Image (cartoon, rainbow, N blue to C red; front, side, top):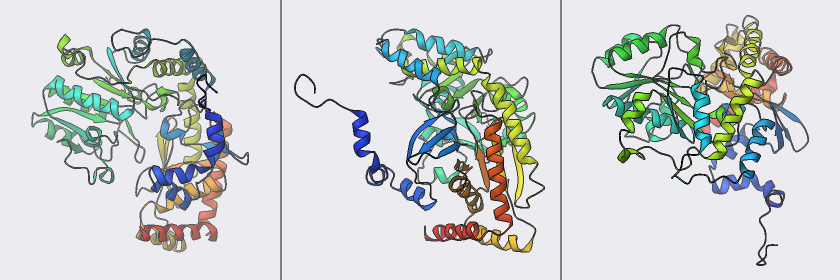
Length: 464
């Protein structure tokens, strides 16, 4: 009890008393389709705790996380260094977010981030990947004085209105028009890029070095050639490294796999948070920032209420320290190659498995039409109802039978995307490959249980 007789807030007691209502609370007050979807595919579990690349349900069963919270949990869950940094910053009782001082943590984190990109000079801190993209779009438009930003077909850059305008997936855009006057070009198509640049109104091109949807890498040489074209036409190259950055692909930034590529603006988020405090960052060249913030009158022309808060900055600094101290980027490179090569070796063994691709610990597994008559009939049944159902058929038994969490890489795609925590090693590779092989065996042997589930998915797709 507090001094005035009121009841003290007790989080542990609240969770103990009401935690069992989680699905009902979501159904009633949040996105009601989420619990419906989870129940439909049998993902409606209750998790009690998490650590590293695993979480545990109420019965004590462990689950291998190959999704990392859509890439947020780059260091896994509850890394002790990040956790301690947050305890330390809270215990310090800093005078945070006064808005009329210059605290040290944002400057220190900016300094550390920029050390990985020596050609860039300044950082703006926001709270998410979509905010980082919004910042880049605004800065590119203002710095060039031009209205239009090009993006690549099938890109994903966020869901706020600006970032949605450069989102290459119609399913996310439908119903939210009018959007900004931005234009798609095919990934890797330099001729299409040059045609748009000749119009003289392009501020820049925003591109994911490896697209999250479908896990498609920019073709070799494309980023460098695009950069040269853009600069020739006085436009900017914007690299969206929200998912591919912070070591995901085996380099600190994915664009660094191609020598000579030096984007004018780079968007960062997700793993920089350590999985605790949302943070987004837009790195850019000095001249761009000086154009945007051209006078004291414009000091707040672009800002974020919670940007640069002490907790987020402490988490980011801790994440970068762990990346270096524990060799996380190198681990992503070597473990990713081990996982990709072992999966790629299965392509010739299973006719439903068509391709394995990616970089580091960002891997796409693509399925396709089989040759044998029996499998082809089942495949056709699923495709007639909705594309992507076979990939979902693989995701579900991986979870229900083998307790491995994965995701389909995009709506109506027959691709599973693996973006596990960057700390996984050979034991997790072994577990995943063994489970995936067992699921492929079931699919190719005509397992009634698996294909019956496929028929249930067809019914769900038809009923929507």
